[in-house]
Image (cartoon, rainbow, N blue to C red; front, side, top):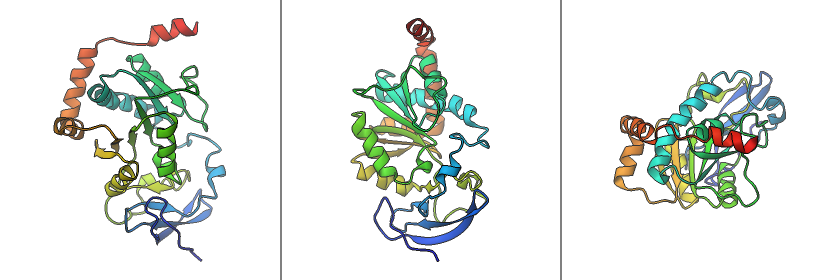
Length: 262
C-alpha cells in the first residue's frame, strides 16, 4: 500500500505517480507535488546501502564534470564578485573542483562529510568561515529536504548565493528511461522543475536565475538586466567566459598552496 506524503518544499499533499525498483531490489514509490512540481521518493530507507561508495561506481563522468564546471563557474564569479573573496564547494566529493578552481586563482574551499577529500584536504572551512558564494554541483538530487540544507548552509557560512547543478524537468514526470533517476545507484531521490527552483528561492528570500538547462543560481544579490542576460544566455556566457579567461591570464594559487603546505 502506498501512503500519501507531504511535499518537503510546499507543504502540500503529493500524488503518487509511479513505483520503480531501486538498487535492483527495493520497490520505491515516487510522488509529485502539483503546487511546486517537486518529484521525490518515499522516505529513502535504502540510503545506507546506496552510499557504500560515496561516489557511485557507475558515475564515470565525475572528472569530466569537474573540468566543465570550472569553466562554467569562472565567468559567473567574475561577473558577480570579480573572482574576489572565498568560495565553498558543498558536497565537493574528492575535492577535484576545489583544486581546479584554486589552480586558476579562485580561493575555493571544500566540504563533504560523506566523501574522502583527496585533492583539497588542507582547504576546508574553519568554525568562522564566511563565503561569498557556495557551490552544490550534483548535490540537490541527493537531498531529502533541500530547503533545510540550503538554509542551514546560508546561515553557517554567512552567505546567500548558491551556484548549483541539477537536471530540471518540465511537465509530468519523465519516462522511466530518464538516466537522472539513477535507479541502479539509489542515490537520486529528489527532482526539480524550474518552478520548483523558483519556489525554493522565494522561500529563501532570494532570486532565481536559470544559467542553463542544468545550471542554476539562487542569490539575494541584485541582478541587473545585463547580468541576467549575460549569465542566462549560453552563447553570451561562453563568449564572456573566453574574455574572462584571457583577461585573468595565468593567475593561480597552485605554487602559493605548495609553498604554504610544504
